[in-house]
Length: 140
Image (cartoon, rainbow, N blue to C red; front, side):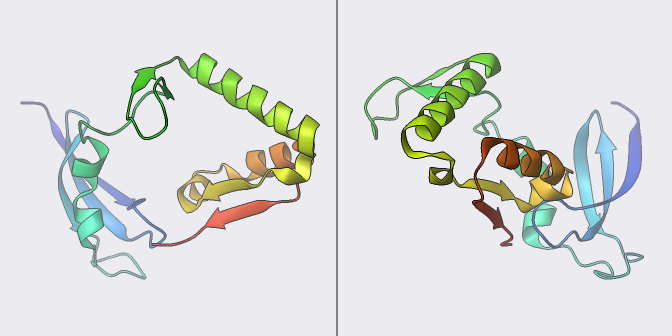
């Protein structure tokens, strides 16, 4: 049994950013409570926030890129490297840009990416690509 520690944080499960108190052992969250000292949520934590470790460590959660090897809808996939996945995506973006122009691409980023500091890099990438189209997902 490893050493347990208490971590005060905010839940990143949705846009709410509820204040949380996590009890962590061996890099796993063993309990979640709402933080009563958080100025906005005052101890509230939703069911999604309570299940964050179950979501985070679910065995079926994707952790590596997959490439479809069968026909669409067959559910046949194979794991590929991150380098291969990024290369294939880059090639497809370049081809769409050449054939249809940069405006044919819409970039989308989720709220967690914005909270994680991804927004400035995405804005720069979109600008360099030449697309004015951006979609931001802010739902809970």
